[in-house]
Image (cartoon, rainbow over all chains, first blue to last red; front, side, top):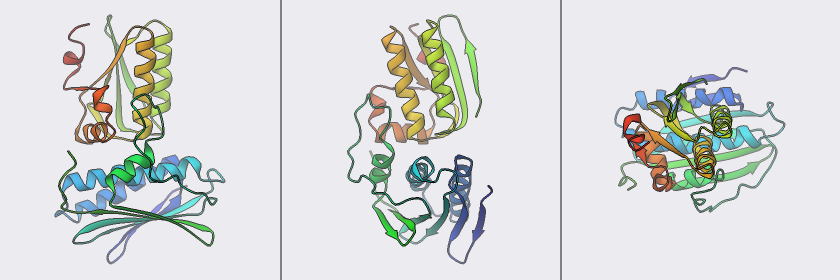
Length: 145
Length: 110
């Protein structure tokens, strides 16, 4: 159940099972990318981390068969954006997009809304037997108020 | 994830550590429910040692807040770091879960 992280020429890659214990490895992967790119604004990294973990949570919670879904995270830092690609072997599904932030009393339903609020681009495609997410945050924007 | 708990008479302080996420949130929420059911509905969640919160952690805080208020108490948060504050703001939850700088400030009128 361990994941393997690797550093390619321009990409930080993690492969493993989409299980709760592997979420820490996603945090670590982004921390590694940030450490090697000191030019990144910590606020960008923090918000991007918040968004990609919500998408990762989604795969961990709803990916089936439970405990058997494998995933591959690839993080790339570019001059003007940071990108994460997530491929997972879970069942096909249609994410509910364009969610508004749930009301104050709601105990759930904020995950994708948070990701959509923080990311400039979020794409989802089903390719063969794989779900493919692409998440992008442009760098150097005005910080959220 | 484990969490510290301190019973200070008028209120109980719960202090999770590390990542307050989908792994850590359910046990903390369960403990809050137990405390509220036992009549301890003035609660502080000290987030000083939490470096990351996700929507599950937020859900546990909101659920705990609702339970506590239904019993005439309250749930307040203290010591939130930058990421927690950013997420509270992003979700508009800072309106009902105002972050206090310290536990002492959170309990000032209890």
